[in-house]
Length: 217
Image 1 (spheres, rainbow, N blue to C red):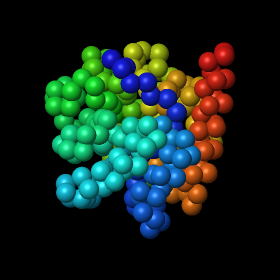
Image 2 (cartoon, rainbow, N blue to C red):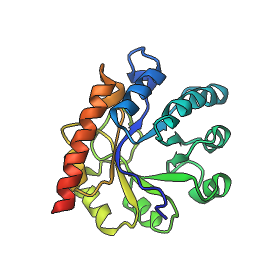
Image 3 (cartoon, rainbow, N blue to C red):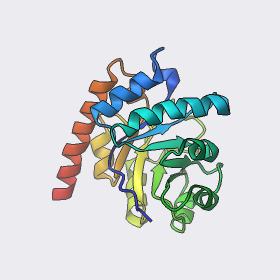
Image 4 (cartoon, rainbow, N blue to C red):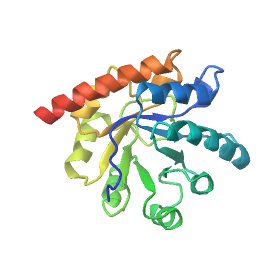
């Protein structure tokens, strides 16, 4: 499908890592630093609270032309008119989400096993979240770690854009791009950094250098 071109640094939020700072403050700093997509992930909030937070974040990112993607919750994405939703393997099936959100919605799908990858070839989604590439404390319910070799293997067979997530940071982002990632999703590298603007800016610079180098090979 790939109507939506995903490229660059993709922020996945985690308010628990923000050190008491308002999530809106961290997101604003990150988009000013250059992140190209923001996924709002909230596991603990009520539906009403989630919608309230999503509206605040949408107001921020829309000023910069950055899409808001809601993690898991198709109902919240629909309620706030977010640009899209990211689905795990246990969430609403992608085809039902597409039916509810419409053809223009961005839909991402996590793949954690090779069976997931194989089935995803038939899915009309905009990107696959390769999860996790490296071990990460922010997501402990996964079925294994792909590593760079796994990412390369997925790239060799998949028709979809790939977002690398899991343990991504300034030190390994370039390696993931070289292995076939179209975008790099980060959580703690920005949310847990005391300077989210600087962290986002440096990550974007790493991405740009690696992406250009990869394109020229």
